[in-house]
Structure formats: structure tokens, C-alpha cells
Image 1 (cartoon, protein in one colour):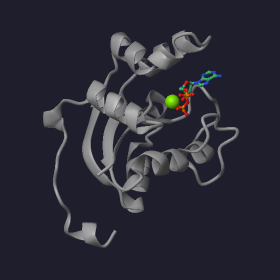
Image 2 (spheres, protein in one colour):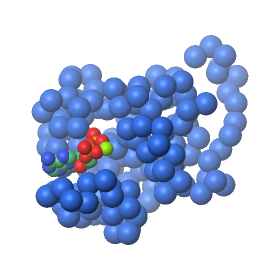
Image 3 (cartoon, rainbow, N blue to C red):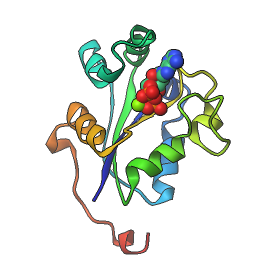
Length: 147
Ligand code: DAT
Ligand code: MG
């Protein structure tokens, strides 16, 4: 079953959006396999956002993601990687449709509430960067045959 890495960014944590965002993915029918409140180190931030190293906003991005706790999660489900991206909305909240997370809760591109892996390769990479094997829970819910 496909897994993705989602993270409530420091702005989402400060704005008390953890519960709301977890609820959206739960109600959609996805399956939570790991979650933790944590503070991202500079080293982890630079590794996680390595693809953006040459971008002008890289320093600001690393400073922001390390500025306060984040809520890191692993979610499982059919097409969860692309569906979670659709639920998140466009990177820049000004372009994100109402009803999406960034469309409903974001204003600035640099503080856009949530991170989500953009491909199977990045999902695998990001899950292993943020979680140890023993922090991922494999379990079955009775409801899984209905949703
Ligand atoms: P996404 O988070 O939708 O995958 P991304 O990978 O292109 O977007 O960029 C990573 C983060 O970097 C993004 O969530 C917010 C920040 N960012 C992107 N473009 C930016 C810009 N032009 N100015 C400031 N921050 C930006
Ligand atoms: Mg990205």
C-alpha cells in the first residue's frame, strides 16, 4: 500500500491546525501509520529541502522549518501521495483553491501550513529521513474494507 510523508509546518502548529489537518486525512479514509511532534534540526532541514539548495529562498525556508515544532506524519492509502497533494492545494496559497488546505488556511508562500511528498521517490526518501522503522505502525482497521 502506498505511503506518503506529510508535515504540519511550524505555522500550522502555532495556529492550532494539527487536529483539523489530521481530521481531514482521517475523514478522507487514509490510514495513519506514524506521527510525532518534533523540532527539525538545520541538518535535517537542509537534507529534506536539498532539491531547493540553489533557490534564493533556501535560507529562509530552512530558518522557517526549524523555527518551531512541526507535526510529522506518515499516511497510507490508495494514491495517497497525489491525493494528499490535491487536498493540500497549490504551493502558493494565493493560487490554491478554496476547500484545499492551503486555499483555506494559507496566505503566504513561505508559510503554507503543510508539506507533502510529491512522488513515490520523495515519499520513500522523506519517510526514512523523518522516521525510524520502529515508529511506523502496521495495523488493520475493521473499517478498511468499507473505505
Ligand atoms: P511544495 O511544498 O508545494 O512541494 P516546493 O517543493 O516547490 O513546494 O517548495 C518547497 C517550499 O518552499 C514551499 O512549500 C514553500 C517554499 N517556497 C516555494 N517557492 C517559494 C518562493 N518563491 N518564495 C518563498 N518560499 C517558497
Ligand atoms: Mg515540494
